[in-house]
Image (cartoon, one colour):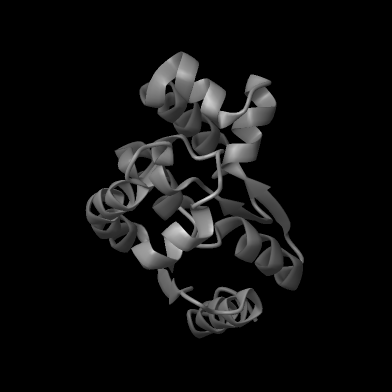
Length: 164
C-alpha cells in the first residue's frame, strides 16, 4: 500500500509499450462500486473473492503490466497465478513511506482506523515474506523518483533476458 504500484506500473507500461491494468480499478468497474463500498457491504472476504477472480482472469492475458492491490498475495491462488503466469516485481516501501503516501487517502478501507501506522506495520509483517516468495524482482521505492524505479525494473528485466 502506497509503494507506487499504479504510478510505476503506468510508467513501466509506457516504457515497454504494453497496456497497463490495475486489478483494483477492474474490480470497481465490474462491481459498479468503489472498494470501500465493497468492503462495507461484502467485507474483506467478499472483496478478496472478487480480487482472486479478477487476478485469475487478468494474469492469463499477455502484453500488459498488471498492478494488483497489496493484499493480493494473501491468497495462495493469487500467488500461484501471478508467479506462474508472469514476472512479479515487488515494489518495497517502508512503513514510514507508506504512511506518508496514504495518510489522507480515504479509498483504503484497511487504514480507516485510529492507528494506521500500526495497521501498516502488521500488514508488512504478514505480507513481506509472501511478497519475497513470489517476487522475481525486488525494487526499493522509498523517496525515489518513479522514473528511476522504472529504470531499475527495466534493467532487472534485461538482466533476466525478459526484455531487450
